[in-house]
Length: 241
Ligand code: ADP
Ligand code: MG
Image (cartoon, rainbow, N blue to C red; front, side):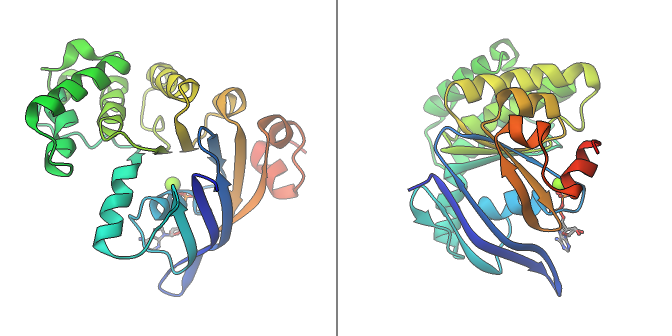
């Protein structure tokens, strides 16, 4: 059994089908890069995996539990699968520590002292242990995104979904965020990341998924996908011919 099993998943918005039968099994500890043109369905796929969108057909299971469309299951799923977005979405009126504690105390009902200890530990992990009492607007974009990663980690997720988490950052801030992701990968975290950082995908990921028009168009080891693309669509996307 794989950690995440995605079987014949379809997703429509109205009459437009944006996921057209996705099959993907992700093993525990795998780091998967999802690449593809804008509009190919990458974000929708991640949003389906953590239950932010309801799938139209097919099935998704995480750690053996099927994603069913009811509140109890969705809540359990979101506890298991963390998600980080392009926009950091930190609460500006809460401190860094407060942001990392919030979902623990609200969603998990973790006692405050324990939530604080976890928050400090996770902030330490992303190199921001010393900024517990700072406010988000006192931090750089790269630091804010690292806080968002700490916030996701504080929920002790089984897997982490990252949707273009460096795309809103100034170029000089990208590396510090990727360094944190690289460390998580080395520690064995299961990661699915939509990314434009091809070098990172090549270096760190176990497999690369190329999405095109709502389908997994090519999938393989980074060295194969990047060095030996099979389809005209992937060749065009990578700018090779
Ligand atoms: P990507 O992340 O690869 O750029 P998305 O998953 O965001 O692609 O979008 C895939 C397609 O689904 C696009 O055509 C987009 O317009 C459409 N789409 C995404 N979300 C919605 C929505 N909530 N309602 C209607 N259409 C949507
Ligand atoms: Mg997207």
